Image (tube, rainbow, N blue to C red; front, top):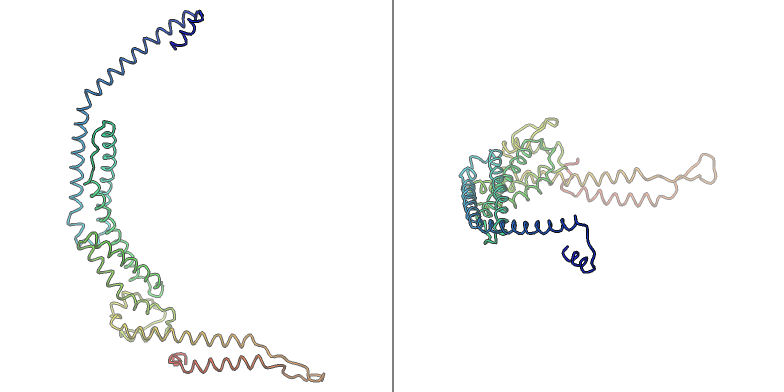
Length: 328
């Protein structure tokens, strides 16, 4: 603005008097602004030490709060096997602690921002980071305990023949891997119990797969129930809890044999169905004999004899199978 007025003066241009007054007022405002800046700068410098000290006190208090939360994570309740089935309450407590730690983390980030603004050394909240990691591990443990318990209850109590045993096997493998890794990190009595329960269930999974064989029919269930001295009723549902209560796992080999026989018999039945389907599709060719009225003879039988020979070979093989008696 001063350069503009100097240029006007150089060319002897007289600006309006009110503009000259405004220009002088602008000079005064500029001087006033500079004085305010100097006062503010002086105030900041005088208060900087006090603000840094106050910030240090707040950081110390925050660390004390973090220490209390960290000590809470070491509470025996989080590793007490008596709480294994009380996972809802434990998860609620862990979630509350996690919420506190998240708030502490936001406060710590605010304090770090202040330290950068004050050009002070930035404090590393190491205990806070360790507490957050520990809380995540504890929460993962109890979430896995919850998921495992709920799944296990469903597998044990749902009608057995409604279970998708192949999917259960995949889930058990995943649970086993997760529980093993969690126990390595957390290593308390609950993580040990989780790993042991998964290991125990994993060990009986082959027998559950045998029992869940989709080829098992009524005649096979009757044999299985005779093993545990129970009567099988086709329309009466049963569950895995019932089978295990009656010690079905004591007959793993016998169940495996029955399940294998069911699969073998199903293959024979499938072969027999293919033979039936083949004859359902075949048709005899009938030809008029020497143009005689109402006198017909069979046409070429080559395709029929070929099918018959193939079926004879298949049937002969089936008769040699050790599972043929189950289809009698």
